[in-house]
Image (cartoon, rainbow, N blue to C red):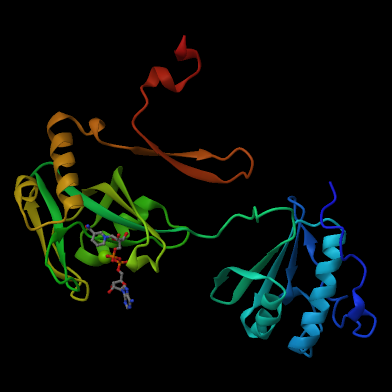
Length: 295
Ligand SMILES: NC(=O)C1=CN([C@@H]2O[C@H](COP(=O)(O)OP(=O)(O)OC[C@H]3O[C@@H](n4cnc5c(N)ncnc54)[C@H](O)[C@@H]3O)[C@@H](O)[C@H]2O)C=CC1
Ligand SMILES: [Mg+2]
């Protein structure tokens, strides 16, 4: 199927405005039929002004259309940001930006754009550090909050960081307590979160096992930090609904067995990419783990 035949070879303006820089605007084809142009990889753009770039891009877009490309991905290094406005005037929109570049897209296919969006969520992770021997749980009060409610220490995940590693790192940074990841207990999803720049927030609580007990809390982020009896956290009014709920969940797990509440983790190989990933779920009994055990 050929898309967008129209306007293939030069409109009226083209003869008199040779597409300056059009030769340079070469892209790579992706497996979906889109073309990706990385300005950082193209030479001779330093002396190109915005108007010439726009003419060159317009001619290139016409060419890509005639070749049936479904989309254009335009990667612009931050120092070449003068090319953003000309691209936008040809219909390009921001797809995303990183610290040193932005990526704009133009959909050329039929109907509305089917290009995937960019990041949708921020991920926050808290650690519920529970000591089974003393039945105590580690809680903090935020310094920067209007109401000083007890909550689990935690914070935002860094790019490429495992959920459990975020929990352990944040707990240590905020309280000085060393701990080990045991399981995932809950996931909260909230949209248009003010702290997530209007994106959605995914807040994950992990069960951690303490390896040290002397509190040395971060004065910047925390006002108070203590080991609290789990029953007291379950009963207190001075906490958030999510903390209260997870405290009840922990009490249930403590009494009836943590396998009732734990999503444990396992690392598995990805089929196509050769990468590895972490899979979290309730414990699978041994006889369900192998195909032969199923009959
Ligand atoms: N119910 C609960 O127990 C609560 C859960 N959460 C969740 O925790 C996660 C975030 O945890 P945090 O402890 O907030 O992250 P965090 O531990 O990574 O700390 C964020 C840091 O960034 C600073 N910061 C944030 N916005 C700033 C700005 N505009 N300018 C300057 N500094 C700024 C804060 O002061 C803080 O030091 C989210 O997923 C959130 O939904 C947050 C509050 C309460
Ligand atoms: Mg925090």
